[in-house]
Amino acid sequence: MSTVCSRRDLQFLLYEMLDTTALAERERYDLHDRVSFDAALDLAFRLADEQLEPHAARADVEEPHVVDGKVVQISETTAGLAQLRDAGFFAATVALDLGGMQLPFTIGQACMALFKGANVSTTGYMLLTRAAANLLEAHASEEQKSRYMLPMNEGRFFGTMCLSEPDVGSSLADIRTRAEPRGDGTYAIRGNKMWISGGDQEISETIVHLVLAKLPDAPPGVKGISLFIVPKHRLDADGNPGVTNNVALAGLNHKMGYRGITNCLLNFGEDGDCIGELVGEPHRGLIYMFHMMNEARIGVGLGATMLGYSGYLHALAYARERKQGRPLEGRDPSSPPIAIIEHPDVRRMLLQQKAYVEGGLALGLWCGLLIDEEKTGESEEARHKATRLLDIITPVAKAWPSEFCLEANKLAIQVHGGYGYTRDFPVERLYRDNRLNPIHEGTQGIQGLDLLGRKAVVDEGACFVALTAVVEEMAGDARIAGFTVEADAVLDAWRDVAAALQATGARLGEGHLARALANATPFLNGFGHIVVTALWLRQAAVAQRALDAGAAGDETAFYRGKVQAMRYMVNLELGPARAWLAATGYGDTTVLDTEPDWL
Image (cartoon, rainbow, N blue to C red):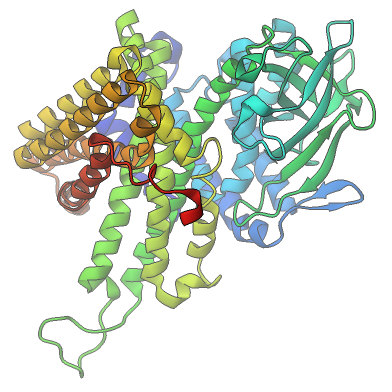
């Protein structure tokens, strides 16, 4: 059995809850069916279990290092990526005429989820490449697509995004990298970029860096940022990598987790011209980059989910095998020890993990379905609705799993006891890997500000109205399945969300920006908890219908587990969620009233 993901759960989410087979009826996907979807998933499971997971621990211990100016990595990383390339997963969702399989994004997300859960570091090279190639497909010229995007689709060139700089971090308005026109339509790039995942390696033929920089006439702030293609090597007339482009590796960052993928400080143009090509129009770079960033944010959340999911499966297996202690009732010291899964508190921790990770996977795959709907929906209204839902759910899809599936990893360590704190079991590594996810691609605080200060209130709350209709639909479905009390509890909690947003809108209208947004992160946590609980209502409704239809054997246990996880979220997690929302609702000023020198 895979320690990456439950195959039965993945099938349930894709085919019973989300009905992804219906996508095969659409023109873009009509060459596919359930058989081809399952074939892709079967191959993804095999690669995850046989080519990626086995070297995750070694890549963590033997992290990349520099020898004579070049990055050295374990050979299994290169071999694993070659397997993913040869299997076509670098371009799984890309159109056939661009070298892809033309799978629905939802199925591609499911495959990527398996790779992330198996080995998030090795997979990171492919995921960054895919996101960069998608940006080029959306915004680059046809010539740029031919020279850079197509080799990325083939897995020959890898890609990165270069945003942050030393001492700048997420404050992109302050970037100092400059692009000077060279008179021939290209630009001389000069500056430094920090925290660049996959920024240097010897695995691919070259690296296509997507670099944010400012032109000489750039207006101040983020409106003055442009986007440039900056390859590690200059391409010759045939599109093959040639001489160096003066992108220098200044050093590797040594991380707590994600150790198997390089994280770099890069210098551009330090030893001669570093040539870049403008993508699209000047001063629109941040808009273009957010095409990649939003996809990356959903991907980060999915990765966080899968690290938590793998930890849960390891903890579940350990709890079933580890014998210690005796029942609380009728304790007989002469009786043999029982498996620790029989202890109520261990079951509590396992059920909490299950609720978080299976809920997080439902959230990530639902986002995939929304992306498919946005691209291929059968009406303009359907596509527009999907766009609005994606706008408001993206910060949640990134941040909620990054917080709560990390909590699942913590619980997995706790289930293992002292062994969990050692390298004898993988749960300590999975926790360290997951700890990055609340930080990169926008911290939790940034996601909270994005949700509360923009996405939930923009356009008179149109995105929130669209999401409210979905939550009400899920609650109605659960009520029909017999979960009236639980459905009412979720709708009551959602009214707290609406009240908090109404209060926020009033404060923003009065110009009280700081007070309106001071508690944006607790609001994000509460909002996400309720959205995930609504998704659990949908899972439970589907499961209950299967039980009512006569599910038997292992299927009975599977479906009952779904119902029980929903009840856990409703009975034990909605209360804290509503408390987190309360501070935004009444405009608590505790944080604002705290002076820096009091801390």
